[in-house]
Image 1 (cartoon, rainbow, N blue to C red):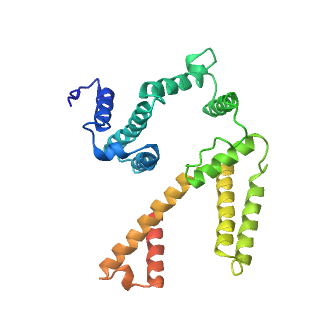
Image 2: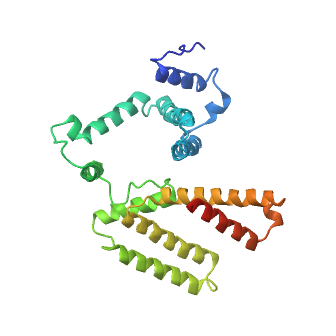
Length: 269
């Protein structure tokens, strides 16, 4: 099947033609033909995280490829939707273009641009709320996506509830609730079932997400940062042990803990 030759101007058209060829029932790729929205969705999530990872590492040479992989996901879903008569890529593109125009009246309309980024964020959320109302959503939390990472979804649920006044007024109240949840878990851990422990721990994590929101911190970003710090310091432990002719399996907690403290101190110098 002939495909458009690559040029500087038609990258998206070429990608869409390739996707149509892959999904062609007569001579497409057997694997691609077997896929549907549900089977491709995990790849979409994975690619979004890989974009975020490249940005976090400032791996700018990798970011182009990761953005291409993410773009492919939109093209893939749009192609499958077009095949069953739901919508097509052009509809997707025009819909998001219309949304950007509607949500930026200070750029594309007659509203003044003389306002802060914080005020623009407030206006953005207000516009989203009007759009949800126009869609006749039944409840305040109805359209918070179920497939979001749990920590991110917790923050979005709390933000949505806070808009209607269901929120602690002060960060101190959140900290007090966190201490209460932690104490409950400590006191009851020996008599709780596995399901009950999971439930109590979930309560703690939910309050932690709320604390992050009150402090103006993205909990996903905070945890990614700590994951990176843990990885960096543990690798320092491995390197120090290797210099002693040992592996972590041949060490013990006391030795590794001392090396951890050394790695921590080295970072602070």
